Amino acid sequence: MSDAAALVDSHCHVAEPEFDADRDAVLARAAASGVSTLVCVGATGPVEANERALALAGRRAPVEIVATVGVHPHHASTADDAAFALLERLARAPGVVAIGETGLDFHYDFSPRAAQRAAFARTVALARAVGLPLVVHVREAHVEAAELLRAEGAAAVGGVIHCFTGARDDARRYLDLGFHVSVAGIVTFKNADALRAAVRAVPRDRLLVETMRPTWPRCRIAAGGTSRPTCAWSPRRSPRCAASPSSPWRRRPRRTPTASSGSRPGRLFSRWDGRARPRRPPRA
Ligand SMILES: [Zn+2]
Ligand SMILES: [Zn+2]
Image (tube, rainbow, N blue to C red; front, side, top):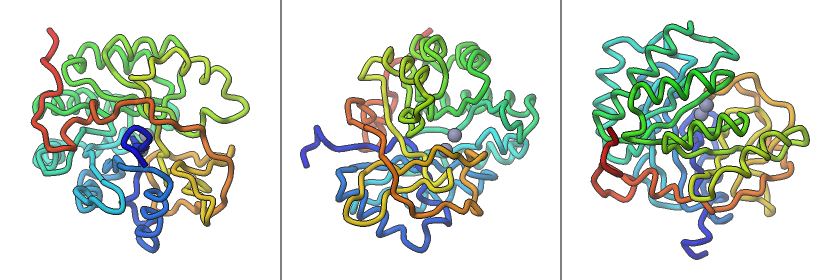
């Protein structure tokens, strides 16, 4: 498969224990389906949990794996000074291409909102300090998240709003900050007309795709010879976003999203090929 046709999964959690039993087979199926690179997001628990993603970063075969490090908004209450000190060390490790996921999740409020805001702002500062883009998780907080990104100068490093499910106006706010938007299989759901309308307004060079697996139960690469690079989705979602080791996801091939590689994630995550940061000069 040519580079032009290669798919990059811009957000997945393949380092999680759910994949310990068959990770190699999952990665092999992804490669066979045209996936060239997986962005393995490390923020799945307390800061130490990032180590799992770092352990996979740097693999070249059967797919390239790069990593991000961060503290998920669900775990923002654990993001104390010691956590950020460790996070900064991890952020400078080889194979780390972005900081996150960070952000605001006002749907579940697993951490107090004040803690989410503080950790989010501090993570933006860290991203700026180390010169890496941000991976941002937002649920039911798009206006506030965009404002925080603006106020904290996140445009200097850019990043991606992952698993975007907002409206067209929300997308516009992020695009105006220079951010990318990533969509997961939700965009294929019958009731996702508003999301599809929002996504149609995103320029192709700012649009990424992701599987986000294994975040949701019943969500994984389809098993068997008909596997596709993207995740098989069920309309019934798990109530969790940060990967849960107890998620009872199952191998159940379903329809696949119509992912394409129209995006240019290599430009966003430019450190993954070893080039030095910064991606672009900071804006005032
Ligand atoms: Zn997320
Ligand atoms: Zn995630």
